[in-house]
Image (cartoon, rainbow, N blue to C red; front, side, top):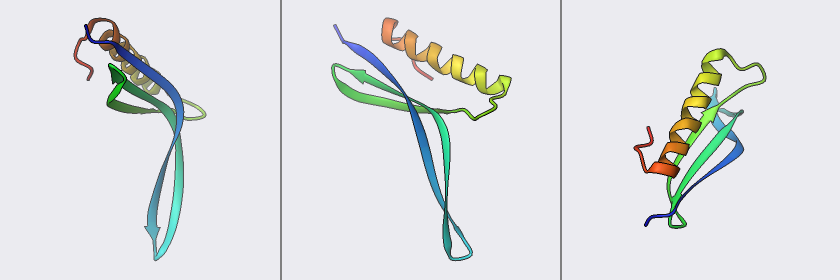
Length: 79
């Protein structure tokens, strides 16, 4: 039997872009969902959220958590 676990952590995604020869960095808050099978990492998904999340942001987060729990408990495909 395969042992599955999902770790949920608040995570800042950092992006650096070139702005006229000068690097500019941005940080975006989100949740990082990390899937493990038998202690081995097999998948990651980052779901963004902001200071004032929209209903769409909330729905995306609920859907991601729902898929992660189904994968962990029943081995269903995690999309």
